[in-house]
Length: 327
Image 1 (cartoon, one colour):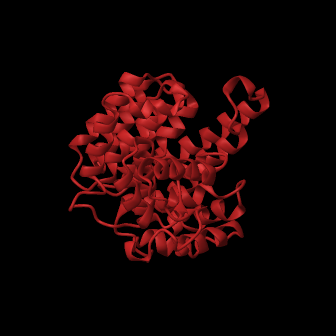
Image 2 (tube, one colour):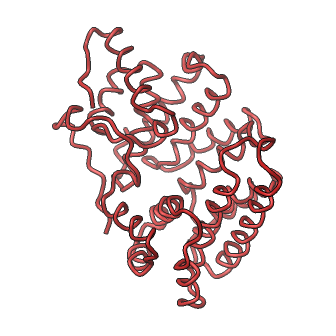
Image 3 (cartoon, one colour):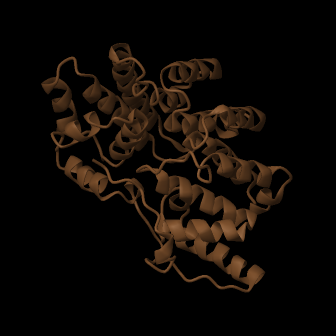
C-alpha cells in the first residue's frame, strides 16, 4: 500500500533543501514508475487494483502514465493478457492521452506542425476508443474511465456542452473527483476557448463538495490560471481573491474533516504558493513546515521553482523581519 502523507511540523523547514519531487514524494509510486519504464506491469496491477479509494487510484494512474515516455510494449501486453479486464484498458486509455501530448509538445497550436497534429489526433483517437469501452464495463461508482475523457475531449476540440456532459457523468459515479475538478477548471479556462466567468462559476460550485475534500482546490487552480493570464502577481491582491483562497483552505486542508492521503503533499504545496502570493505569512510558514522542501505543482511548472520560492521567502523576511530558513 502507499504510505499516507505525514507532515511533521516538529522537524521544521530546514529538514531538506527545496527540490521538486514527483509522485507527491511517495517512494512506493517512485519505485513502481521506475519499473514501469522498463516494461513492468505485474507490480502495477495488484497495487492499483487493491486501492480501495478509487479517486486516489485514478490520480496514481495519471501520475504514473504521465511519466512513461512513448508507448512501451507492456501496456498493450497487459491489455491482451487480461481480456475483458477494466483496469488495463483504463490505464492504456489514460496513457494514450499523455502519449498524444508527447506528440504535440507544449507549443501553442500555431507552432505545432501538421504532422504532429495528425499524430496527436490519432493517439487521442486511441484514447477515446479505450476510455469509451472501459466506461461501458466500469463497475458501479467507478469514474476512472471518464475522468481522462476531459483532457482527451479538450485535445479533440469537444464543445463545452460535451465536456459538461462528461462532468455530469463523473458526478453521477464519483462526485467531486479531484482529478476531474482540476481538468474542468482547465477545460473552462480562456486558453481553452472558455472564459474567466465560466471557469470561476465552476470553481465556486465546488463549495458544495464535502468538507475536507480536495475538490475545494478548484478556486486555487482558477486564480492561478487567471493570474497567468493577467501576467502579473499583482493579481493576487485584487478584491475577492484572498477571500476565495482562505475560504477554500478552511473547507479543505484546514478542515477537521480533511483526511491525509498520498496526494496531500500536492494540496499543501498549492496552498503554500497561494498563501505566499497573498502575503499570508503565518499560513505560509505553517505549510512550509509541512511541505519540508518537497515541491510539487504549481512550483514545478516554473522554469526555476527554487527562485520563485526564494522570491516569496525574501518578501516575507522583508515584511515581517523574520527570516525563514531555507528548505
